[in-house]
Length: 208
Image (cartoon, rainbow, N blue to C red; front, side, top):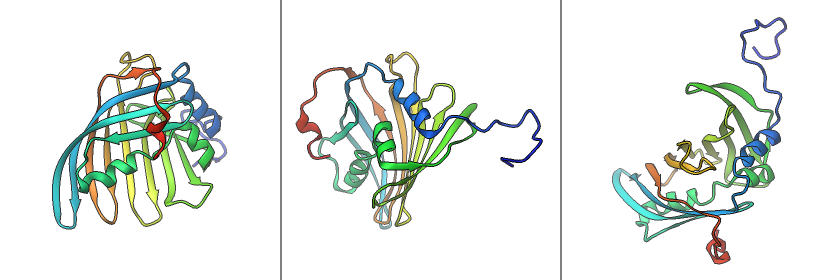
């Protein structure tokens, strides 16, 4: 148990970094990145009522430093639009520090390494009840995020990255599991070729 006296030396140490330091280290991986835009393909299935419907949609994801983010989908089917809208509003490390009160992190095994687990609660009234994220204790890359909502819904996003794709180790794919009262779904996001540090019109973010 954490805090017990006389723990064996092999026990996992309690991390000394606080949430702010961990997220700042995560942000530093993007030092020099002012913007990106990347084509995305999202495929999966959405279950509405008792019917499961497959879908595939394309679009573009945008990021503008320090904290602007948007996902624009090209003619998404109506039954998958809610999933696309939700993915547009997950935020960034910069917005998480601003919008959430994050408790002292803990460390735990995650895959073949150790990750910091950060849990945040919204500072303002929100549909989100808690946000939990796993950040690599080695690279400080964000590996998984779970949003739990006040109505019992949940959204889980797990990122896959490959070193060397860009110097910023941006994601190459992600898996999404959504469970909402009106729909549930699973999706795979595949990111195409990133265009880095190119101007993005402000209108891209106007509706987000």
